[in-house]
Length: 293
Image (tube, rainbow, N blue to C red; front, side, top):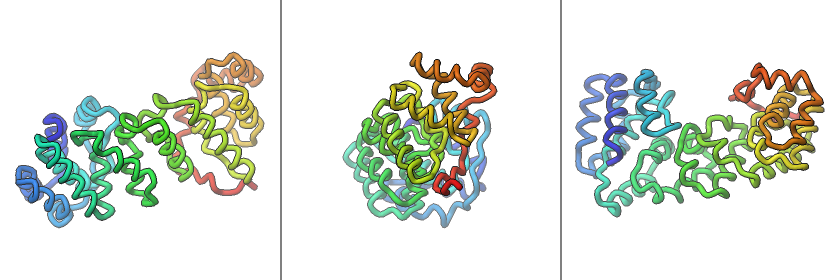
């Protein structure tokens, strides 16, 4: 099974959320033989009511200490119960364990897939789930994609650079908030920065906007091409574009970026005095597909 500590933390959260009858059913299935446990994974909505998960600060800290970036906040109790069941699955025999998880993936409906992808950072033998994870990036099912991408540390740990870049680009393309991607800044790379620049040029040519927070991925790679993008942002009519360019230039190591920012002293002071930050540009409802008037 997964870390005993993780299993214990999730048990504590569930016992606070479930009725006694629900928890007794779940606890019994968590200790059952694998086939019974897998059947319970599918049957969970029949025995556990669907409620929104909220957790104490103590459990939030404990969970983040064990798996940084991972959260169950805003999940449903059914999703959390299913993930907990997976952490109870005996993993001592790798071949059997992997076969059981693969069987669940092969037969899962959408909500079951959401639970399976949510559980990836908690499963043993993490390299075995890489193919499934990269498949989810190609998924057109929003909930499945979100389960892999949002607050899930698995991709940051195991994706190749190419797979990672595809994940980030698809998140941006789908107008989803990239600040919910775990490891976003740690895995920034020059290839991704220039792919984002190309993407932005296509959007601008079509009269559409680009989410301003994407430029946080450009700071470390500020060459002439990206500097031209900063100039474009600073000339925009959108004040959020100005903030994005100012922040990207300020955090860049390029002296040319600093010189460009110095030409906009109000923005430069705002960044220096921390009256603007990337947190100001973390929008959940982006709607960048609307054509600018």
